[in-house]
Amino acid sequence: MTRAVTGLTPLMRDSRIANETGRSASRLFLFSLALLCFVFAGPRMDLAQDSKPDQTSAGYVPVLSGAFAYIQNSSGGVQSLAPQINPVLLVPMGKSLLLESHVDFTGFFQRRNRTSGDFTGEVFKTIESAQVDWLADSHVTGVAGRFLLPFGLYSERLTPVWIHNLQDVPLTYAIGTHPYGSADGLMLRGVAASQPSVNFQYSAYFSAHSSIDQLPAERAAGGDGSMFFPAARVETGLSYQRSLEGYQINNEAAYLTWQPQSFEINLKAEYDRNHYGDGYWIEGAHSPQQFFFAPRFFRRFQLVGRMEQFFVRNGGGHGLSDVDEKRPEFGVNYILRDDWKLVSSYGRLFSSNGNSNTWNFGFTYRFIWPLWPGKRS
Amino acid sequence: MRYGNRIHWLALPIACGLGSAALLAAIGQSVPASAAGPKTRPDPAVEGERIFQQNCSRCHIPPMVLNPRVTGTIIDHMRVRARLSRKEQQLLLKYLAP
Image (cartoon, rainbow over all chains, first blue to last red; front, side, top):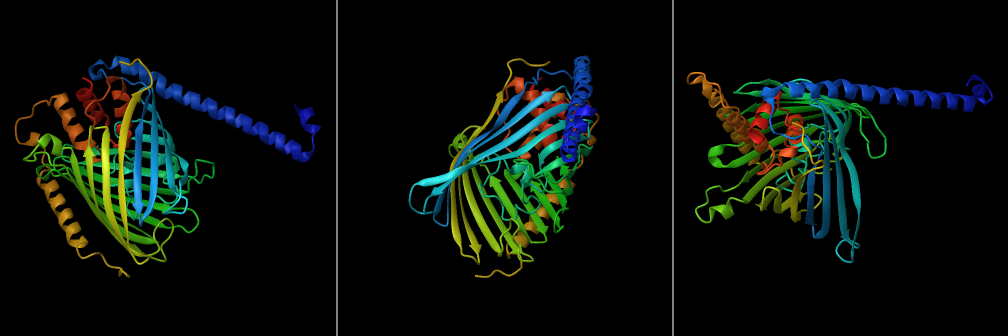
């Protein structure tokens, strides 16, 4: 190998040494990954067989989950069609490791001249997450890879198309998620203390800079902490993120959810703030469970209302509007089954750039498909 | 039309009212039910149902039917996403796939 290397020009020699070093590093990385899987996945499977008191009939086969959706939007008189497929692949490895991958394919089609002509557009592909979850302890889960940023209520929990009640994201959505919505790095999360009266949940993460195609991320660090009161069904939390790239800024959010059983209503509210703006949204959703007429039919309706405002700071931009805006929005959804949902909503955006109406109609379908016939007991 | 840098006149009272009511409800109902009477070992399936009702519907409509083959994988996923403890995960499994 030494002779071969000495016969090359210095530049080629450096390049070859670098390639060999890279190959060695790759082999070392793969070996480490295999060792990691063996250490954590192998022994845990044995442990699972011994722990008979905890055994259930639950299967642990790989799963393809996710949603299909088709949303027709009219905003300011301009029609757009948005078919979506969001598959989520889940592969358990032993009792403590879970591989997750979430990809988003969203088509965006508009008329060629915005209001006339044939529909044209493209399909956007995004890798939302590709992560390894290590269920290390009752209170700690380690996450490595690409993951959705846990910021506020919307980013991680309500983003899936089959979950959110209104199809338009809040005006403040870019705070804490701009520009990619996902991070490449490490995260620790879990429940710090779980009592019958209150749960303390947390997550803390670091994201490295990445310019890899389909896996872009910005250097940032942050965390989220929340308290959940199970008896009252109240949750309140705070999120913080420090952007560590370019002009370093703080992103902050405070949120509250409440599901009072006596009123059959689901309330959510969030306040977000960063250098470029701040704002809030308040959303309520109600399903009449005991309607006096045809209750079986009417309990599948979901009435939704949301009010939100955004205020510009320092010129705005960076994913946010550059003028103050506010938007009341109303929606009526019909849950055909727990996996099929018809959605519709109307909102009016009040902005110094011009007021406009926004209409959304469509459907969502959630699926959970096993990818393997057997089950592990 | 220019909107000043102030919160809409309806938003502040709504937010304050919502927050106060929610926190009062949380404080008022934060005493565990078991504290009122003699301690009995709760049924894991009942406990699992309670955790299911309390946690799943915080974000989405809970599934009415879940294939037993995928239950373990899905609950692992939800343990990560919903930040559940191992005990809560086990109780959910007892409830959904006894």
